[in-house]
Amino acid sequence: MLKRKRFLFAVMAIIPTFAIFGWVRMYPIVETLRLSVFQWNLLSRDKTFVGLSNFIELFGDDQFLDALTNTAIIAFGAMAVTIPVSMALAGVIYHRTRSRFAGFYETAVFIPHVVSLVPAAMAWKWIFDAKLGPLNAVIVALGGEAQAWLFDPVLSVVCIILLVSWQTLGYAVLIYLVGFRNLPKSVYEAAKLDGANGIQSFFFMSVPLLKPITLYVSVVTLISGFNVYAQAYVLASDTQGAPGRLVRVLVLDMLENSFQNFRVGYAAAEAVILLSIVLVLTAVQFGMLRQKGGK
Amino acid sequence: MSAKARARRSNFLIDVCLFFICLALLLPLIMLIANGFKTPAEMLVWPPTILPRNPTLENFVTVFTETPLLRWMFNSLAFATLSMIAIVATSALAGYVVAKFPFRSINVIFILFLTTAIIPFEVYMIPLYFQVKALGALNSITGLLIGYLVMSFGIFLIRQNVIASIPDELLEAARIDGAGEFWIFRHIVVPLLRGPLAALAVLAFFQAWTAFAWPIITLTRKTSFTIEVGLANFQSAYTVELSLLSAASAAVMVPSVLAFVLLRRNFVEGIAASGMKE
Image (cartoon, rainbow over all chains, first blue to last red; front, side, top):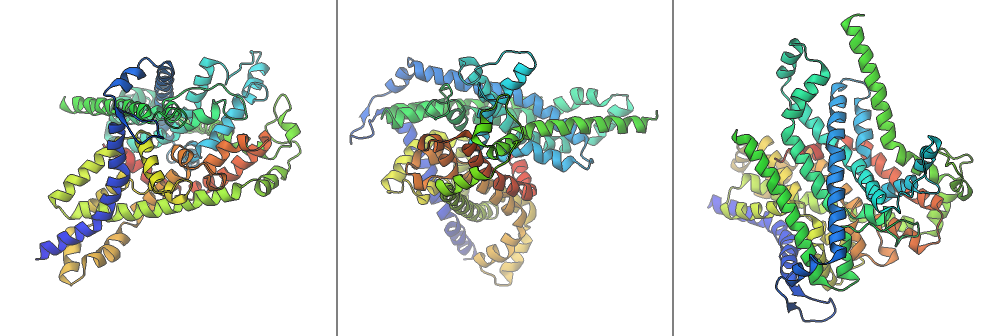
């Protein structure tokens, strides 16, 4: 009797959440998978089953391949910048935990992560501006040559990587700080007694001990990198009034196919590829964690 | 020189370096705010100035009087607040239930939902768009909200905190005293979860406040834009100077940065918990 009453409460309490979940998460996920094997032009009622032909077409589609390459470069590039910088920065901030300015450091590093994407991208767009931007001003003042940052096909991708890394850095530093605080203090004291200096204990102890955190931050950075959209939309897109060369990224290509070219099934197939990338990355992370635990 | 003095000197050098790094990280935002105070003519000066020579408030006046910036801010605020309430409410209830009511059927569904947490929103937003469209909720806060009603991480966060900080004995004692299940939740569980719930609230609010991809596909009418979409489309909708754009961006950014600085502890707690998932 009592157990039934409790079960009733549990069900009543959880049904709204489960229902919402089913409606706004499970259903559209399944629908994405389903649409990816159909051809649908958004306007007509019929969807034609086309099997895997959307996927086959995607791998011969230059725009998609361009988007996939750019997105992968941005994701891995941002990770390559974020991981070493954030680990070093977190190490130094942790070292100065007792400093009066510790709170300031943490806040300052984290602010770029909480600022809305569009204002942040606006700020960087001006910095990179070829004719008016301070970046070129500094380069010219140092005797270098002004670059058309947002127009050059390589440099515009570099700009997006910089912007994405600047935004991710705060998050990564925060996670690393948690990691540093959880490291066993005794090991460091022992190392100190043996004559290791701060830099040595960072490289030979912190870096290996923080490996699970590095793995986690890498995967989170990669996954968010593969979903890059707003940054490319503002910084490097020619649909805006301010100039910039369009850097095609996956989400942009997907939305364009769905809402401008009216090829919803085709766009869903792109979404499925994005999903597969995310799943593979997550699987690699778990695999590596397990491998480590097994030893 | 003693070891202590040497340590003090190296710490001082580290502080100086850190200070400059922090400044460099904030510089883009500082320059953006400074640009908001420049005259259109000064924006075209080469080499660019960092601080405005003749600061003017004109850009801010123009932006607030001649563009729907306030309207967009209101939309964002309403969207973020409602999303926060929905996420906190659903996460609190569901997190408590999955932590303290070990019924198999509930747990199976919970694990199923938890696994969807790794799937990025971008993967399923197109079908979700059609669901919202079928409801006739495009261009509305309701439509926006549909994408931001639940957060799997929120349920997980509350579940972990319930397990860690609410002993079964406490709930049993209340039951023996004749308290109803909902009363227990409302008057015993929720007050004990104040910390994690606040962290989740801040996290949820900022998540909605900074949302971009979802608003940009569901909102096409200028009056229904959120601040992010409004700013992104600013240039195509108005013949606009860079100084005006900077003023608008700064006007949006400053309150959210202030809010973050005030709520930093809650925020950090929530984010740090997200890293502890594994």
